[in-house]
Length: 248
Length: 285
Image (cartoon, rainbow over all chains, first blue to last red; front, side, top):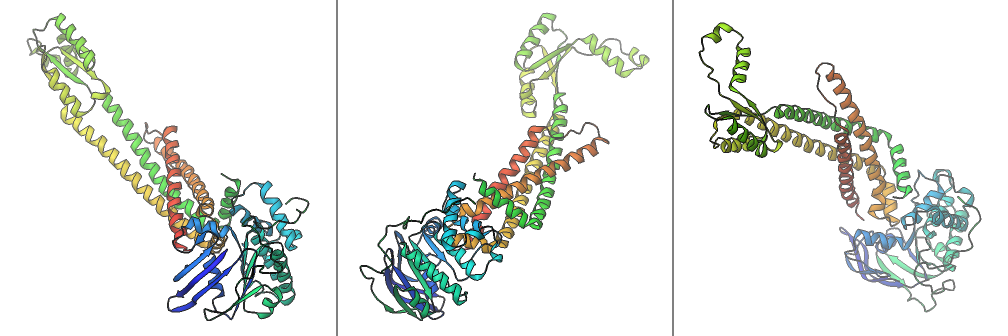
């Protein structure tokens, strides 16, 4: 599903990733652990094609790094669900509209398609009652749950999370991790980057360790990668729970 | 077009009212200037057409030409060149006498020296210097015709004036189009930069350039529509002010006004598509 083949990435003189090779299968849960500037974010940016490798090949599904057009890059990103440490919510629109944006970007515009999907995602992350709130009215934990709802609303095959608990206090961090574990159990592959071993411990799954751009510890994917990860097909990868009642 | 894009355009318009107002003000100024040139061009065209319509060719006939020959020639001229009016020698003298006015002066002339003539109102396609020159060369070959006059120098000047007015209109149009593109490009750049975090988030979520650009393009087109209407209002006010001092100055016919607005909208759409393509590419990944 995702593979890195001898990937090196430099930003000018700075070496961000050094000859990294690894792979991740469908439905797998992988935690990329490493200190700050170890290369975790670069790893995720290479997967989303926000950055291109200096050498080597990154493959995501049928997309290969190299000269992907802007249209193909957009298409690739629509097959992924990405969660950022700083949430990246749009401040001028409500929780509902933030999540709906991902549905509309996926090409669905009619209320009949948008409303039930968004409400279902908000229900899953426990924000059903906050759909009209603006991001500025939410706590950090709620903002991150809103970002998770946006990442899962289109049922992507892979969820990428870049330090999703970095800005959260312990209780919210725990809730977010439990949420991510549940989403993974339902079938989504999950790749999480973190500096915190306790987060990696709490999440479980396969661990890869990055140090100054080098992969120092990477177990090969097991045939059954995680007790929580049944093999799944590509999108729509995992079955949503029952839709919540009511409309927007 | 999905309603979503219009809602987004309205959201952006409201969020950046200052920027939108500046853009509307600048575009109204540029379009009003274009409208004034268009008004001048239209009225110059009308005036030149009125003058041009009065252009005629005079065929002076030989004294010995019989009435039957005149009849035959008149028919020939009608078929080939336009509408002829016969002016007999007596009628020419009568007209001349009225123009001179002094009977004593006329008494000194023993006989009527004026020839009979055919005054030809030429077909519209012959109302230019080249065609009139060629027509004159042809009709002077007829045996009944002594001489041909059509005011060659005057016609040539009129044609040059007409061509000059058209060139000025085209040049003004190009200048205004460039000004419009410049205003739109910079307004869109500022609007997109003001919304850069949102645009970057959308890009990260997999939004296509079209998805991101469409609301901005709709906003640009709506601002241009408003500017074009305001500009036409200003031009109308100017025409109304001028017509009190200078009668005969007309406002643009509705087809011209509609074409003016349509051209502005088309230009806005193309310019904003071009501008947004460049701006979004400059954002990189």
